[in-house]
Image (tube, rainbow, N blue to C red):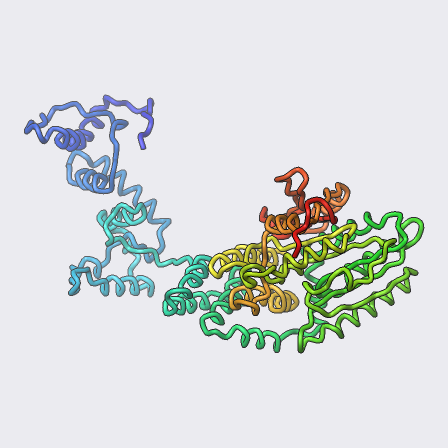
Length: 554
């Protein structure tokens, strides 16, 4: 870089001109060497502002010349004084110094490269404090320039490499995932390196790496089901899981905003009506409906008659029927206390097999269909080939129920396709989730460990280690769901402005500043409420009704 000329410097000072003459000789001789002309001793020296140091070699030659000229003691003295000042900031094991070991010539190895054993011994002696206090007083220009070259990337490979090593676990995980498809030995080596730096009790990145490494290890060994069995066997009790869930929703806005959005949509659809029928898909604890029952009980004119049909999957060994009975019993007790007429019905079946005829629908009731992130587990085209896939079947069945409102909350993560793209999508999504947990829950929290082991860790493990029907985590972006809903004949409803405002106010006043509430307005009539972390959209919500485009006959 050229520096501006300082007007305060006397350019005609005889001492300065005399000191500049050797530098001018070097510059001029290099310019006119091809013409064979010799530079006269009385050539006027150029201004210091015209010097352009373009490389370390030029710095080296100029400094050495300055030290060798009798008339340039000004430069030598100034440089040595600056070196003395710089020594104050150097550690005692300064790498820019020479020692007796460094002065010895280095032997060449058989490969022609320098033997670095002496250098290692010198490093060890400096670390042990054996170098005297005068070690930093002798400055080696060659070593300094070599270090400068190494830092700028313009020197030979002899420059000493940095001992500090930054581990990028995200990159290692992606390389390891890629290697599982074509180089299993390399994948094993990368996995070992990842496991050295991953921890289920570390920071957010280390915890993320731990669970993804578990998935990669299970995938390499072909033991995904065994790993799942181990995690299930070590699962926390229902009481601890419930406490962990409560701690999560108290520090993270995602669930509360989801419940607010769904309940507000159902309340608006049931306004002025005397009967309400809710069809709810998937596993739940009933927290959403207890809140809705309280809101309905406080409604002007009294509460409508409420009926909830809960549809869940049969899962051998997990006893979902027993759980649904417990949820129904709790909701019945709450409704009785609030004075809300209430009925509860449980259906255990594959979701794509449940049709409108199975629900005992009645003409005078408001029908609300609710999906709180559960449709993400339905199989898609990657698993079911050549016939209608369960996702499209379920949406078509929902359309045939002719709901007054269909509330859909979905994970905005693309990890339902082929392995490498799925791995990247899952890593992208869960890196934000684990970062959020790291910012909102203490690292030493046992409830956080239980939550990560029982929910987020297992989900990441399943997305990585499983294939085919064994893989139940099949996240899809909300834009893909937009297309599926339109194809099924479900018409999107506009977002309720009051609901959006309530969600924004809740997040702003009660939660971490990095949570984000936004609206997707890519299309005027197709709007989704988005939830995210640090600008990354993680969840999406929309409301729909039957009608609009003709639904596909599935």
